[in-house]
Length: 229
Image (tube, rainbow, N blue to C red; front, side, top):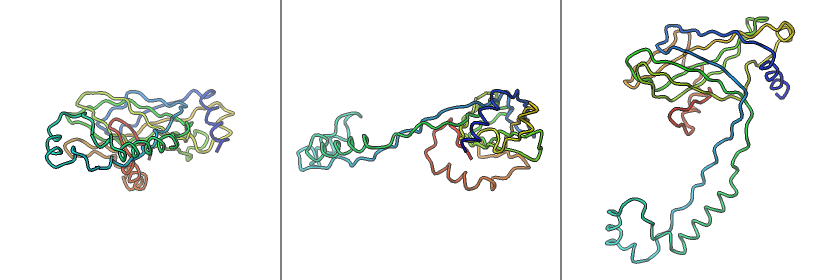
């Protein structure tokens, strides 16, 4: 794995890349794309702390609880000042200090800029960055991503996917020696719109990424971000 990673870094320095986009009738026009080495730090894991216990205090009597329902947001919960409440907060603080915050991960950032060409709002985009070795055309590497977006009619947006994998799974020695660049291409595989309609590239099927797609949906996913498939 380390050897492949070092070879991928070498390619970024010595090869001037050929590039193109394959629209295949996609309503999203790719206006720019690139890739580069990148480092990402995983988000810290959230620690679920127990809610402050409801001690037998005047503020927890029915009348007082009902009155607090009308208080403005941000008012301090009186249970936080009880012995059990303070103990729960202390336990959560200790657990957070012991939680692994995640080590930085080296990989590659794949970026494209797209423009919506129709009168619909784009909500989801499936796309891929392809690399083909000219010394061995059958050697094709694909980096696929799923992005949650909000792109209005005529609007443009840059999408970025991160992967630990570089441009090629296997580096051909002939390609390195000849200085012939990889052939890069971008494909839009599927677009989902806010009105429930879908556009999909004919040669692509959602079934081919079924496992990774289901995994991506189970993970926390913020609007405007991309997941690797």
